[in-house]
Length: 410
Image (tube, rainbow, N blue to C red; front, side, top):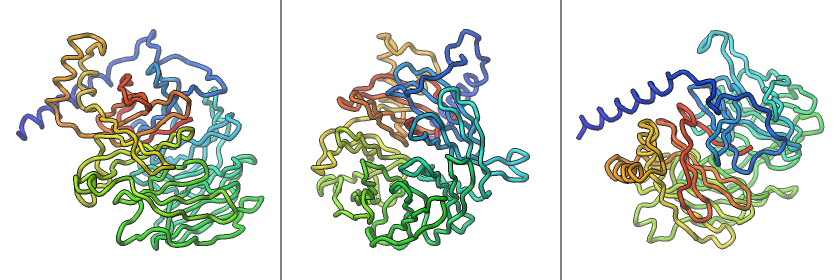
């Protein structure tokens, strides 16, 4: 059994290398120079790539690449200004590629042309971490961008994006990552099961720094840092599938009662959350999408084979979406099989049955009235598009990246 799998992996990597080495044709629609409309398309998506050191803007309806911006090394997570005119991208650069003098900046780009408007140099401490979630956050009023640092001491670099200046560094000992939590407030998770709330003054300095109540047990059942926001409430999910809501709408944060994604029967069947970006929320419908797999303890990073859809208000699962085998999709793409042909459909079914299913690592859901669910793997890089309401597979986006490390909605 080992030899065929090794040969399969070798063949897939070789096929990917050939495809990536092929020169771009002048008439290839993916290589046009465009000016983007001021309003993002409802199904646009940023796809970060660790190996290409960039994030690309993709239209999930057509599979077209609309543009890309370089992101340096590490986390590539763009934030869009509240008026939609600018993009803020924390980036790290080394003078000699992988070594030499390090420079960390927040790059400011025009949201329609993707041209660089300026940059703000910040301390060379920006954290790099594998989940690539919550590495930076824009305040709810759009004035300040906070970038998480770890050297290993933890802190936040604050950038005033309106005045294009570094406002200062705020220490956050024992607490990590950063989430927007109000017009001038950010939240960080702490090792003792509490949350640290940092409030800024009008110039971006530290106005106050307080710990909230202990809202999870960091030893018995810690929460994953891969939280999602539903309105003014952050939903932090524990390794065992318990949701811990944190309401940041008022002057003081409120910690709601925890509730479970699973019932006892599902727990006995071994269902668990998993993946590197495992949650998404559709705001209008109040539905939480969660990547799930069957596995043992401490498999919270394992990819998912299903997406469970949960009504946040009722704490009830309302749908299960079985995800297609991404490895089969990758092989179909590399051999150039027409997705709508009868023979290709038969081959696709055969490949999905024959090939091992590695699962999906990242999901996102668009926020329009006809939302799509986007499901991605890192390597080989695949991106599948599903109808978020029916769960029907709609299409696959061709060659979205080499190593996908982040999905973000514009």
